[in-house]
Image (cartoon, rainbow, N blue to C red; front, side):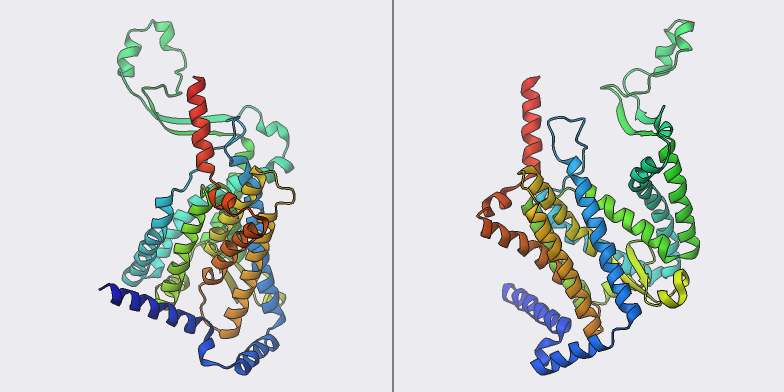
Length: 403
Protein backbone atom coordinates (compact mmCIF):
# COMPACT_ATOMS: atom_id res chain seq x y z
CA UNK A 1 0.00 0.00 0.00
CA UNK A 2 2.87 2.36 0.82
CA UNK A 3 4.49 1.91 -2.62
CA UNK A 4 1.14 2.43 -4.35
CA UNK A 5 0.58 5.69 -2.48
CA UNK A 6 4.04 6.94 -3.35
CA UNK A 7 3.56 6.00 -7.00
CA UNK A 8 0.15 7.69 -7.13
CA UNK A 9 1.56 10.89 -5.62
CA UNK A 10 4.49 10.89 -8.02
CA UNK A 11 2.17 10.36 -10.97
CA UNK A 12 -0.05 13.25 -9.85
CA UNK A 13 2.91 15.62 -9.57
CA UNK A 14 4.19 14.60 -13.00
CA UNK A 15 0.75 15.11 -14.55
CA UNK A 16 0.44 18.47 -12.82
CA UNK A 17 3.75 19.62 -14.22
CA UNK A 18 2.87 18.46 -17.71
CA UNK A 19 -0.51 20.14 -17.56
CA UNK A 20 0.88 23.40 -16.17
CA UNK A 21 3.42 24.21 -18.84
CA UNK A 22 3.03 21.38 -21.36
CA UNK A 23 6.73 21.83 -21.33
CA UNK A 24 7.80 18.22 -21.51
CA UNK A 25 6.04 17.79 -24.84
CA UNK A 26 7.66 20.80 -26.48
CA UNK A 27 11.21 21.58 -27.49
CA UNK A 28 12.85 24.91 -26.78
CA UNK A 29 12.05 26.33 -30.17
CA UNK A 30 8.35 25.53 -29.85
CA UNK A 31 8.23 27.00 -26.36
CA UNK A 32 9.88 30.22 -27.54
CA UNK A 33 7.44 30.44 -30.44
CA UNK A 34 4.49 29.93 -28.12
CA UNK A 35 5.60 32.75 -25.80
CA UNK A 36 6.29 34.98 -28.80
CA UNK A 37 2.82 34.36 -30.22
CA UNK A 38 1.25 35.07 -26.84
CA UNK A 39 3.18 38.34 -26.51
CA UNK A 40 2.16 39.46 -29.99
CA UNK A 41 -1.51 38.66 -29.33
CA UNK A 42 -1.85 40.66 -26.11
CA UNK A 43 -4.53 43.27 -26.69
CA UNK A 44 -4.09 46.67 -25.01
CA UNK A 45 -7.25 46.20 -22.97
CA UNK A 46 -6.09 42.83 -21.71
CA UNK A 47 -2.68 44.22 -20.74
CA UNK A 48 -4.37 47.00 -18.78
CA UNK A 49 -6.66 44.48 -17.05
CA UNK A 50 -3.70 42.31 -16.04
CA UNK A 51 -1.84 45.37 -14.76
CA UNK A 52 -4.79 46.47 -12.64
CA UNK A 53 -5.16 42.99 -11.17
CA UNK A 54 -1.51 43.08 -10.13
CA UNK A 55 -2.00 46.49 -8.50
CA UNK A 56 -5.10 45.25 -6.68
CA UNK A 57 -3.02 42.36 -5.34
CA UNK A 58 0.07 44.21 -4.10
CA UNK A 59 -1.69 47.26 -2.61
CA UNK A 60 -3.80 45.38 -0.01
CA UNK A 61 -0.77 43.25 0.90
CA UNK A 62 1.24 46.38 1.66
CA UNK A 63 -1.57 48.08 3.58
CA UNK A 64 -2.50 44.95 5.54
CA UNK A 65 1.16 44.26 6.38
CA UNK A 66 1.68 47.81 7.66
CA UNK A 67 -1.48 47.66 9.78
CA UNK A 68 -0.57 44.26 11.23
CA UNK A 69 2.32 45.79 13.20
CA UNK A 70 -0.10 47.27 15.74
CA UNK A 71 -1.24 43.74 16.60
CA UNK A 72 2.25 42.62 17.63
CA UNK A 73 2.62 41.50 21.27
CA UNK A 74 3.44 44.52 23.40
CA UNK A 75 4.12 45.03 27.06
CA UNK A 76 1.70 47.92 26.86
CA UNK A 77 -1.51 45.98 26.33
CA UNK A 78 -3.42 49.16 25.50
CA UNK A 79 -1.20 49.73 22.44
CA UNK A 80 -1.51 46.21 21.06
CA UNK A 81 -4.69 44.60 19.80
CA UNK A 82 -5.50 40.93 20.18
CA UNK A 83 -5.76 38.73 17.11
CA UNK A 84 -6.41 35.06 16.52
CA UNK A 85 -3.10 33.18 16.26
CA UNK A 86 -2.91 30.07 14.11
CA UNK A 87 -1.30 27.03 15.72
CA UNK A 88 0.92 24.43 14.08
CA UNK A 89 -1.93 21.94 14.12
CA UNK A 90 -4.31 24.47 12.56
CA UNK A 91 -1.79 25.14 9.79
CA UNK A 92 -1.28 21.44 9.08
CA UNK A 93 -5.04 20.75 8.99
CA UNK A 94 -6.05 23.88 7.08
CA UNK A 95 -5.66 22.30 3.60
CA UNK A 96 -7.82 19.41 4.78
CA UNK A 97 -10.54 21.75 6.07
CA UNK A 98 -10.28 23.82 2.89
CA UNK A 99 -10.61 20.68 0.78
CA UNK A 100 -13.74 19.68 2.68
CA UNK A 101 -15.28 23.13 2.23
CA UNK A 102 -14.37 23.21 -1.46
CA UNK A 103 -15.81 19.78 -2.16
CA UNK A 104 -18.89 20.63 -0.12
CA UNK A 105 -19.50 23.71 -2.28
CA UNK A 106 -18.97 21.57 -5.37
CA UNK A 107 -21.64 19.12 -4.18
CA UNK A 108 -24.06 21.95 -3.36
CA UNK A 109 -23.68 23.40 -6.85
CA UNK A 110 -24.27 19.98 -8.39
CA UNK A 111 -27.33 19.17 -6.27
CA UNK A 112 -29.12 22.52 -5.86
CA UNK A 113 -27.79 24.60 -8.73
CA UNK A 114 -25.73 27.75 -8.54
CA UNK A 115 -28.73 30.13 -8.44
CA UNK A 116 -29.95 28.95 -5.02
CA UNK A 117 -26.50 28.49 -3.53
CA UNK A 118 -25.36 31.93 -4.66
CA UNK A 119 -28.53 33.48 -3.23
CA UNK A 120 -27.65 32.12 0.22
CA UNK A 121 -23.95 32.91 -0.13
CA UNK A 122 -24.77 36.42 -1.36
CA UNK A 123 -26.74 37.17 1.80
CA UNK A 124 -23.91 35.90 3.98
CA UNK A 125 -21.26 37.95 2.22
CA UNK A 126 -23.51 41.01 2.30
CA UNK A 127 -23.44 40.89 6.10
CA UNK A 128 -19.80 39.88 6.51
CA UNK A 129 -18.60 42.17 3.73
CA UNK A 130 -20.47 45.17 5.11
CA UNK A 131 -18.97 44.71 8.56
CA UNK A 132 -15.48 44.13 7.19
CA UNK A 133 -15.71 47.09 4.85
CA UNK A 134 -16.91 49.29 7.72
CA UNK A 135 -13.81 48.41 9.70
CA UNK A 136 -11.46 48.93 6.76
CA UNK A 137 -13.06 52.27 5.82
CA UNK A 138 -12.91 53.79 9.29
CA UNK A 139 -9.43 55.40 8.80
CA UNK A 140 -10.79 57.12 5.68
CA UNK A 141 -13.85 58.26 7.62
CA UNK A 142 -11.68 59.66 10.40
CA UNK A 143 -9.67 61.64 7.84
CA UNK A 144 -12.69 63.06 6.00
CA UNK A 145 -15.36 63.52 8.66
CA UNK A 146 -15.43 65.97 11.60
CA UNK A 147 -13.70 64.80 14.77
CA UNK A 148 -16.83 65.69 16.73
CA UNK A 149 -18.46 62.53 15.36
CA UNK A 150 -16.16 60.43 17.55
CA UNK A 151 -17.36 62.06 20.76
CA UNK A 152 -19.68 60.22 23.14
CA UNK A 153 -19.41 56.74 21.56
CA UNK A 154 -22.00 54.05 22.15
CA UNK A 155 -21.34 50.65 23.69
CA UNK A 156 -23.33 47.52 22.94
CA UNK A 157 -22.76 44.66 25.40
CA UNK A 158 -24.35 41.22 25.32
CA UNK A 159 -23.50 38.88 28.19
CA UNK A 160 -24.86 35.87 30.04
CA UNK A 161 -25.76 36.55 33.64
CA UNK A 162 -24.51 34.13 36.27
CA UNK A 163 -25.16 33.45 39.92
CA UNK A 164 -28.28 34.68 41.66
CA UNK A 165 -31.31 35.53 39.60
CA UNK A 166 -31.37 39.30 38.92
CA UNK A 167 -35.10 39.51 39.68
CA UNK A 168 -34.50 38.05 43.12
CA UNK A 169 -31.65 40.49 43.71
CA UNK A 170 -33.77 43.45 42.68
CA UNK A 171 -36.55 42.42 45.06
CA UNK A 172 -34.17 42.90 48.01
CA UNK A 173 -33.23 46.45 46.99
CA UNK A 174 -34.80 49.66 48.10
CA UNK A 175 -37.25 51.22 45.63
CA UNK A 176 -34.80 54.01 44.84
CA UNK A 177 -32.12 51.46 43.97
CA UNK A 178 -34.43 49.67 41.58
CA UNK A 179 -34.64 52.75 39.40
CA UNK A 180 -30.85 52.92 38.95
CA UNK A 181 -29.42 51.96 35.58
CA UNK A 182 -28.03 48.45 35.73
CA UNK A 183 -24.32 47.97 35.11
CA UNK A 184 -24.25 45.59 32.16
CA UNK A 185 -20.52 44.94 32.25
CA UNK A 186 -19.94 41.26 32.99
CA UNK A 187 -18.35 40.17 36.22
CA UNK A 188 -16.42 36.99 36.94
CA UNK A 189 -19.74 35.13 37.20
CA UNK A 190 -21.07 36.52 33.93
CA UNK A 191 -19.94 35.39 30.50
CA UNK A 192 -19.22 38.11 27.98
CA UNK A 193 -20.62 37.16 24.57
CA UNK A 194 -20.49 40.42 22.65
CA UNK A 195 -18.97 43.83 23.41
CA UNK A 196 -18.78 46.57 20.79
CA UNK A 197 -18.05 50.27 20.99
CA UNK A 198 -19.01 52.46 18.04
CA UNK A 199 -19.54 56.10 17.13
CA UNK A 200 -21.12 58.11 14.31
CA UNK A 201 -18.13 57.57 12.01
CA UNK A 202 -18.70 53.83 12.27
CA UNK A 203 -22.36 54.33 11.43
CA UNK A 204 -21.52 56.45 8.37
CA UNK A 205 -19.02 53.82 7.16
CA UNK A 206 -21.59 51.08 7.78
CA UNK A 207 -24.20 52.97 5.76
CA UNK A 208 -21.79 53.38 2.84
CA UNK A 209 -20.72 49.74 3.00
CA UNK A 210 -24.31 48.50 3.16
CA UNK A 211 -25.23 50.69 0.17
CA UNK A 212 -22.38 49.19 -1.85
CA UNK A 213 -23.47 45.75 -0.69
CA UNK A 214 -27.01 46.32 -1.94
CA UNK A 215 -25.62 47.44 -5.30
CA UNK A 216 -23.54 44.27 -5.51
CA UNK A 217 -26.38 41.93 -4.51
CA UNK A 218 -28.72 43.28 -7.18
CA UNK A 219 -26.30 44.19 -9.99
CA UNK A 220 -23.12 42.13 -9.40
CA UNK A 221 -21.22 45.23 -10.46
CA UNK A 222 -17.46 44.63 -10.66
CA UNK A 223 -16.65 47.86 -8.81
CA UNK A 224 -18.81 46.82 -5.86
CA UNK A 225 -17.18 43.38 -5.94
CA UNK A 226 -13.73 44.98 -5.80
CA UNK A 227 -14.77 47.22 -2.91
CA UNK A 228 -15.65 44.20 -0.79
CA UNK A 229 -12.80 42.07 -2.09
CA UNK A 230 -10.11 44.63 -1.33
CA UNK A 231 -11.44 45.46 2.14
CA UNK A 232 -11.74 41.76 2.99
CA UNK A 233 -8.16 41.20 1.82
CA UNK A 234 -6.80 44.08 3.90
CA UNK A 235 -8.66 42.90 7.02
CA UNK A 236 -7.53 39.29 6.57
CA UNK A 237 -3.85 40.17 6.06
CA UNK A 238 -3.93 42.56 9.00
CA UNK A 239 -5.73 40.29 11.46
CA UNK A 240 -4.61 36.75 10.56
CA UNK A 241 -1.52 36.07 12.67
CA UNK A 242 0.38 32.96 11.66
CA UNK A 243 2.38 33.08 14.90
CA UNK A 244 5.73 31.94 13.53
CA UNK A 245 7.65 31.36 10.34
CA UNK A 246 7.45 27.59 10.87
CA UNK A 247 3.67 27.75 10.97
CA UNK A 248 3.64 29.90 7.83
CA UNK A 249 5.87 27.41 6.04
CA UNK A 250 3.61 24.53 7.11
CA UNK A 251 0.45 26.31 5.98
CA UNK A 252 1.73 27.40 2.58
CA UNK A 253 3.43 24.07 1.85
CA UNK A 254 0.14 22.29 2.44
CA UNK A 255 -1.77 24.78 0.29
CA UNK A 256 0.82 24.35 -2.46
CA UNK A 257 -0.23 20.70 -2.91
CA UNK A 258 -3.90 21.52 -2.21
CA UNK A 259 -4.00 23.95 -5.14
CA UNK A 260 -2.20 21.57 -7.50
CA UNK A 261 -4.47 18.65 -6.69
CA UNK A 262 -7.80 20.45 -6.96
CA UNK A 263 -6.91 22.29 -10.17
CA UNK A 264 -5.09 19.55 -12.07
CA UNK A 265 -6.41 16.39 -10.40
CA UNK A 266 -10.14 17.18 -10.62
CA UNK A 267 -12.60 19.65 -12.10
CA UNK A 268 -13.75 20.71 -8.62
CA UNK A 269 -11.77 23.94 -8.27
CA UNK A 270 -12.57 25.20 -11.76
CA UNK A 271 -16.27 24.32 -11.43
CA UNK A 272 -16.62 26.10 -8.09
CA UNK A 273 -14.65 29.12 -9.31
CA UNK A 274 -16.93 29.50 -12.34
CA UNK A 275 -20.13 28.93 -10.35
CA UNK A 276 -19.34 30.78 -7.12
CA UNK A 277 -20.65 34.32 -7.35
CA UNK A 278 -19.32 36.14 -4.27
CA UNK A 279 -16.95 39.07 -3.63
CA UNK A 280 -13.94 36.84 -2.96
CA UNK A 281 -12.10 38.05 -6.04
CA UNK A 282 -10.94 41.24 -7.72
CA UNK A 283 -12.03 42.03 -11.26
CA UNK A 284 -11.09 44.40 -14.05
CA UNK A 285 -12.66 44.63 -17.52
CA UNK A 286 -10.72 43.74 -20.64
CA UNK A 287 -13.03 46.07 -22.59
CA UNK A 288 -12.87 48.97 -20.13
CA UNK A 289 -11.77 51.47 -22.81
CA UNK A 290 -14.85 50.69 -24.91
CA UNK A 291 -17.55 50.15 -22.27
CA UNK A 292 -16.24 51.76 -19.08
CA UNK A 293 -17.92 50.67 -15.84
CA UNK A 294 -20.54 48.76 -17.83
CA UNK A 295 -17.93 46.40 -19.29
CA UNK A 296 -18.68 42.70 -19.06
CA UNK A 297 -15.50 40.93 -20.23
CA UNK A 298 -13.70 40.62 -16.90
CA UNK A 299 -10.27 39.35 -15.90
CA UNK A 300 -10.22 37.84 -12.40
CA UNK A 301 -7.85 37.13 -9.52
CA UNK A 302 -9.03 35.18 -6.46
CA UNK A 303 -8.57 36.62 -2.97
CA UNK A 304 -6.84 33.44 -1.85
CA UNK A 305 -3.95 34.24 -4.20
CA UNK A 306 -3.63 37.59 -2.42
CA UNK A 307 -4.37 36.79 1.21
CA UNK A 308 -2.54 33.48 1.66
CA UNK A 309 0.88 34.71 0.47
CA UNK A 310 0.05 38.10 1.98
CA UNK A 311 -0.12 36.84 5.57
CA UNK A 312 3.45 35.54 5.23
CA UNK A 313 4.62 38.85 3.76
CA UNK A 314 2.97 40.62 6.73
CA UNK A 315 4.72 38.25 9.13
CA UNK A 316 8.07 39.21 7.59
CA UNK A 317 7.27 42.92 8.01
CA UNK A 318 6.73 42.22 11.72
CA UNK A 319 9.91 40.10 11.79
CA UNK A 320 11.90 43.06 10.46
CA UNK A 321 10.14 45.42 12.86
CA UNK A 322 10.76 43.20 15.90
CA UNK A 323 14.49 43.11 15.19
CA UNK A 324 14.78 46.78 14.30
CA UNK A 325 16.02 46.23 10.75
CA UNK A 326 16.27 49.44 8.78
CA UNK A 327 14.70 49.18 5.35
CA UNK A 328 12.72 45.99 6.15
CA UNK A 329 14.83 43.72 3.87
CA UNK A 330 12.86 40.51 4.45
CA UNK A 331 9.57 42.24 3.73
CA UNK A 332 10.74 44.02 0.56
CA UNK A 333 12.56 41.03 -0.96
CA UNK A 334 9.54 38.77 -0.38
CA UNK A 335 7.10 41.45 -1.49
CA UNK A 336 8.97 41.83 -4.80
CA UNK A 337 9.22 38.03 -5.12
CA UNK A 338 5.42 37.84 -4.77
CA UNK A 339 5.03 40.48 -7.48
CA UNK A 340 7.33 38.58 -9.85
CA UNK A 341 5.59 35.28 -9.05
CA UNK A 342 2.20 36.81 -9.79
CA UNK A 343 3.46 38.25 -13.09
CA UNK A 344 4.86 34.84 -14.02
CA UNK A 345 1.51 33.22 -13.17
CA UNK A 346 -0.31 35.63 -15.48
CA UNK A 347 2.19 35.04 -18.29
CA UNK A 348 1.79 31.25 -18.01
CA UNK A 349 -2.01 31.50 -17.84
CA UNK A 350 -2.13 33.78 -20.87
CA UNK A 351 0.37 31.75 -22.88
CA UNK A 352 -1.09 28.30 -22.37
CA UNK A 353 -4.77 29.35 -22.15
CA UNK A 354 -5.47 27.02 -19.23
CA UNK A 355 -6.49 27.32 -15.58
CA UNK A 356 -3.44 27.63 -13.35
CA UNK A 357 -3.02 27.02 -9.61
CA UNK A 358 -1.45 30.36 -8.72
CA UNK A 359 -0.03 29.00 -5.46
CA UNK A 360 2.12 26.66 -7.54
CA UNK A 361 4.19 29.71 -8.43
CA UNK A 362 3.49 32.06 -5.52
CA UNK A 363 4.32 29.71 -2.64
CA UNK A 364 7.89 28.94 -3.80
CA UNK A 365 8.39 32.65 -4.47
CA UNK A 366 7.39 33.84 -0.99
CA UNK A 367 8.87 30.88 0.92
CA UNK A 368 12.22 30.39 -0.81
CA UNK A 369 13.06 34.10 -1.02
CA UNK A 370 13.23 34.85 2.73
CA UNK A 371 15.04 31.55 3.37
CA UNK A 372 17.72 32.37 0.79
CA UNK A 373 18.03 35.91 2.12
CA UNK A 374 18.47 34.59 5.67
CA UNK A 375 21.24 32.25 4.47
CA UNK A 376 23.04 35.10 2.73
CA UNK A 377 22.74 37.32 5.83
CA UNK A 378 23.62 34.51 8.24
CA UNK A 379 20.24 34.76 9.97
CA UNK A 380 18.61 31.47 9.00
CA UNK A 381 18.28 30.25 12.59
CA UNK A 382 16.84 33.57 13.67
CA UNK A 383 14.21 33.51 10.93
CA UNK A 384 13.29 29.86 11.41
CA UNK A 385 12.96 30.31 15.18
CA UNK A 386 10.96 33.55 14.98
CA UNK A 387 7.71 33.18 16.88
CA UNK A 388 5.21 35.75 18.10
CA UNK A 389 3.47 33.09 20.19
CA UNK A 390 6.52 32.75 22.44
CA UNK A 391 6.60 36.52 22.99
CA UNK A 392 2.97 36.50 24.09
CA UNK A 393 3.57 33.54 26.42
CA UNK A 394 6.59 35.25 28.00
CA UNK A 395 4.61 38.43 28.56
CA UNK A 396 1.76 36.48 30.17
CA UNK A 397 4.23 34.76 32.51
CA UNK A 398 5.78 38.12 33.47
CA UNK A 399 2.32 39.52 34.16
CA UNK A 400 1.53 36.58 36.45
CA UNK A 401 4.81 37.05 38.34
CA UNK A 402 4.08 40.74 38.83
CA UNK A 403 0.75 39.84 40.37
